[in-house]
Image 1 (tube, rainbow, N blue to C red):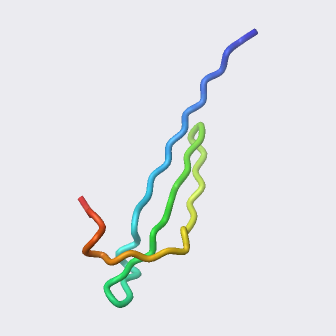
Image 2 (image 1 turned 90 degrees about the vertical axis):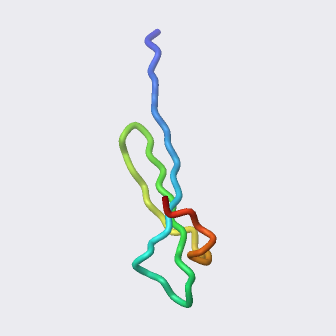
Image 3 (image 1 turned 60 degrees about the horizontal axis):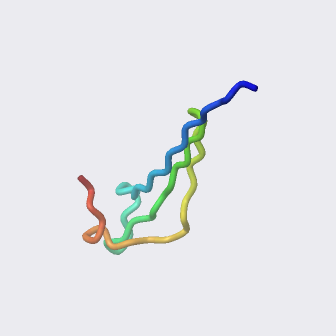
Length: 53
């Protein structure tokens, strides 16, 4: 039997181009074997609370 390996990653980021009342939407990206899926978490956070660097 041949073993296969898959890769997986999960990242979160904010879209700073959509600032509204000093809050920004949070997004997530799931990558499995190089295939990406981006989606909104339907949540906002104060831009001052997110580490942009």
